[in-house]
Amino acid sequence: MSSISRQISLGFLKTPPLWTRKQFGIDQFVIPDIDPGRIKEFSFPSKMRLGHKMEFVFNAIIESQNVYKLIAKNIVVQKGKTTLGELDFLLRSISDGSLIHLELTYKFYLIDTEISEPIYQLVGPNRRDMFYTKLDKLKEHQFSLPFTKEGIETLHERGLEPEPLKQQACFKAQLFTPFKNTKVSIRPLNKSCICGFWIRFEELNSEPFKDFQYYIPLKEEWILNPYEEADWINLFNLLLEINIRMLKESSPMVWMRKSEGVYAKFFVVWW
Image (cartoon, rainbow, N blue to C red; front, side, top):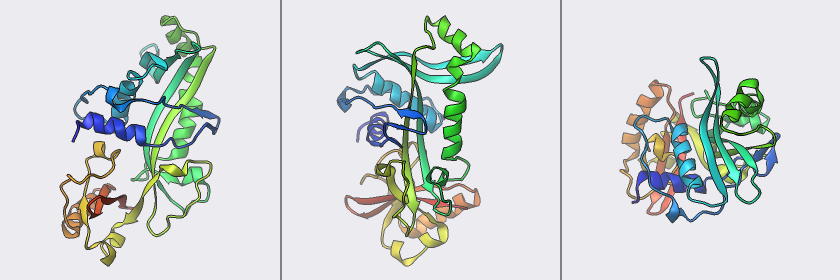
């Protein structure tokens, strides 16, 4: 297989945006068509969080196309010695010269159908991460930051003006429906983001799952589709490993191999 950085870059490109065009008052960034072979390989610093790894990936992707020029990234806005926040990326459109402030997000959300409104249904695997709180942070903090006194000064230091500044999000996500309840309505969100299901431990420990093989991917592999070369184990050994995760209140992703080339991915939740 190719290097992990190339695999993750391809996985990133294949992941759909959580919404298209403009929703919630936020424009979705459209990644230009890219020849994956042009994406340079790179290495991640050790012990880096997945969200920060996605910034490395996006940077490599932007450097492999000729529609936008990367002006700056990870621009820290400070008030004295206090950090107010950070702008993820500033891009310049080569065709019209417009400046884009882009915020990057890559999430894994489980759809909790016990909640009525779609934007409130999306929760992280451990229920500590909610889509609507991320949306509020984007709108109320990240996108207002360039227009604060300190944000304007930070842009001026780079010879840039906050007006006119286009603001867009590159918000990609993998969504997981409840087991046995895959027909969900998530409008205005993008149904193409649904790529698996979530299940509770006691449901997994049942007859329908006993004949398949399993693999618990590393977190940096979550973005990938399952592949044949994984170190597959049987259900008994999977349950032993997952039971430890449940005691630690950690919800792992699992890949399931039904037969050669036929896979599924899902989360086992502790809550």
